[in-house]
Length: 65
Image (cartoon, rainbow, N blue to C red; front, top):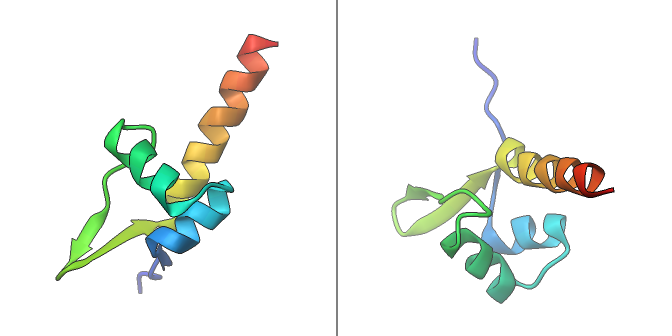
């Protein structure tokens, strides 16, 4: 049996990244955050993809140091 991954709303994903919803959508538009999964008119992001954005930012910070 496959376990479902939690899907985040824009406000929850933005909160996880510590940014406003406006900034979150800007990051989505520029490709920093992956495009959402559309479920009807709703946009959702797998939690693992938001965590991956954080991990990439941490890796980039380590490379710059």
